[in-house]
Amino acid sequence: METDLKDLAIKKAILITGGPVRIPGDMVLPFHPSRSTAGPGAGSVSIVLTFRGMRVKKAISRKEGEFELVQKHGGYELLRNGHPFIPVVEIRPTIFHSPEQAFFNLDTECIYDCKFCASRKLDKRITKNLDLDKVVSMVLNASKRDDFKAVAFTSAVVDSPSETVKRLAYVICRVREQLDPDIPIGVEPYVECFDDIDRLKAAGADEIKINIETYDEGTFKKVCGKQDFRWILKAIRYAVQVFGRGKVCTNIIVGLGETDENVLEGVSYMAKIGCVTTLRPLKLNDLNVSDLENSLGHLEPVTPDRMIRLAEGQKEIFELYGISPLSFRTMCHMCTCCDIVPFRDI
Ligand code: SF4
Ligand code: SF4
Image 1: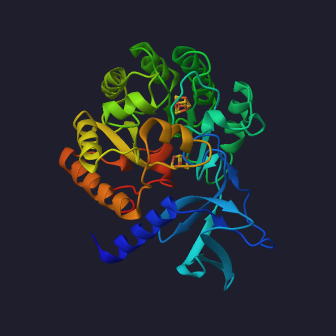
Image 2: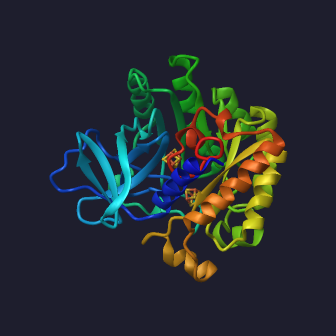
Image 3: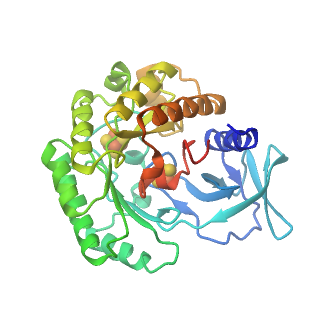
């Protein structure tokens, strides 16, 4: 890897694994910050920063932060602990949750109890409680924006996976029938039968993300004990038959006490069957740390070096099996804000 590019990827990894960005009290942001109800930033107020082609979503604070955004020569510079870190950064707008993408989480209440999940513990005042037709109209309104490129939907499981899939299929179908056919739709569901996957495809989804969360089955039982590891592997295999190679992706969370070998074994398993992994560093926060440490013991934070090392290993595996995150036009592989993405960042 070119040294310059690797230096930038390390800076991105430092940002992803680091603390919030302080915004000086008198600075007026050019865009509304985003308040996420899913993903690693669930519950926090964030902005998207870009630098030299890299994109990162960072929680912001008006009080304190490991990083600080300062105005310089009409643009912005990023400091880290008071020292120059990235000389030129830009602030980018999100559409809903993500840049260039309307990515909606339909629900945050969940019958499952994944120990890392902050989403279901959010204060009900910030979980939005949107009805389905309102979501459809928000997507259609957003589609008028010049920077609009993609749509995606996810949801926690309020009642059962199949009932949730029906709601996801409803919004996909309503959006699909009214949206430019070239705009891709991604979906990130929990499924309980092959019919759920067929239903989402039939509704008009182009890409699907079914999360395995960890490739260490023992860890899976401890942190996602109400879900079934073996079934998720089967569902991913079936999803590749339905959606195609390079149109199915899955999260592997890094930082749950697993080894690098286990992570890369998971990446290889998925690559072999045509599924493109996202390696997502665990974010420990007030909402998840005690549940996680009660289940898994003390957890070491993911370091930027580990993120880079794993992303390099992941890239080699992708090359070997001829798959790439670049085949995605929706969800996290398109957004790239929370991970070191092979072929984009390294
Ligand atoms: S399935 Fe797990 S990660 Fe997903 S919303 Fe429910 S508790 Fe959270
Ligand atoms: S990478 Fe994924 S989780 Fe992170 S902001 Fe983008 S869409 Fe959300």
